Image 1 (spheres, rainbow, N blue to C red):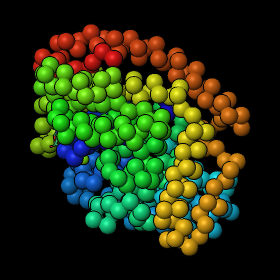
Image 2: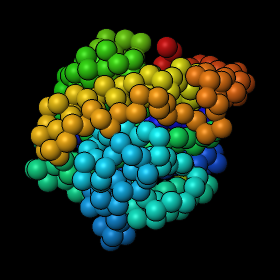
Image 3: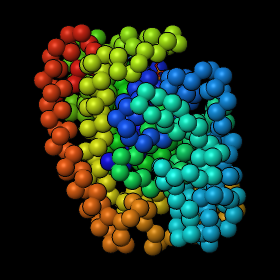
Image 4: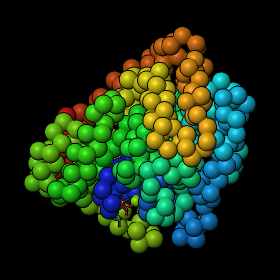
Length: 372
Ligand SMILES: Nc1ncnc2c1ncn2[C@@H]1O[C@H](COP(=O)(O)OP(=O)(O)OP(=O)(O)O)[C@@H](O)[C@H]1O
Ligand SMILES: [Mg+2]
């Protein structure tokens, strides 16, 4: 499986907590993970167990945009300089692509290993946000550094990018919200919690976004009913108050296997749902959408800001695709598709197990997996 996954939601809903648990879950299962903190409040490092000092010392992607742009641009003749590269500038012939497992100058500059139970992950952070970063058309956009990386990333089997992200106007305008195979919208069972879901759903509508709601801080059947009424089948799973998370917040994270069993099951439900989107991945659509948003951003502010006609950066023949996949549009994904099918069987049965226990979990509120 190879997946780009975002956790979005209202401030304080639990994006960082659930991203960090999901990252730990993947790492414990032996998957290769790049974790990205693109949240306004930069807390993913500490949630993965880094001390405040270690987290503060992480290199900020936002401060390394020129390096990122220069590397990704490679020898692409359509991009005359890093200065004319904006956050939506798509890769083309000559561009350098990023792979999850490789070493490259972008990781050297921006990623740091974080040791978790089960193995290390790479962590990249945008760096702290200021007022100026929240503008839609910001040339120096910090989330733009992430968007550029996602648009130049070809991920292979058992590789995951997990992004902790704010559902802000920035990501809607730039197209960042279309860059994921799966978007988990974290919602508390409150009116505000579900209003962010409704907003996201509206934006997602025209772009074939796969969006699933993860209920958080759910305490009982009432909470589940409330979320179900708002999100219907989009509600994938719910997570209750976790003592493990509380202990971690106090600076004493127990071993990950000691996370509540219901929450472990909830995390596996997330992985199963994310993996299931693999078959639907369409590199041509993915490339088309990045071009769409690039042209929109070029017209709205990029052309003026760079003094260049940025439409000229689009390479009409280029399709971003998986390593090893041939030039034929669907040949590459067909091979990977076989693996997806094979794994689907095993995961489907785990899903059934989780659902069977949903009733019991609902009472305690700890990680109830909900029937679809
Ligand atoms: N399931 C849970 N069990 C226990 N505590 C939780 C749970 N989910 C979230 N919390 C706590 O709620 C608080 C907010 O969570 P978190 O920081 O993950 O939210 P966020 O959406 O990332 O917030 P922000 O918008 O500030 O980045 C944290 O103190 C976190 O430990
Ligand atoms: Mg957060």
